[in-house]
Image (cartoon, rainbow, N blue to C red; front, side, top):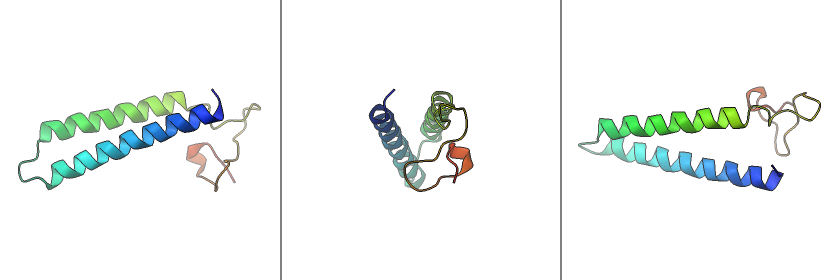
Length: 83
């Protein structure tokens, strides 16, 4: 997968996470928010996180198998990027 494709996928994932967060916020602020819907949304977030972990588990490694440096500011070691 090219870096442009990876960036596009990451941007789509971020958009979906932001949409889910906004919906959860609306539910929490509503007088009669639906706990069932909140649970569904949390399940979707969990699924997105699991999918990201499995698809990105090697994306933080260079071709040598060592942690790589990020193109933008240093990220935490947990993100796969190291200073």
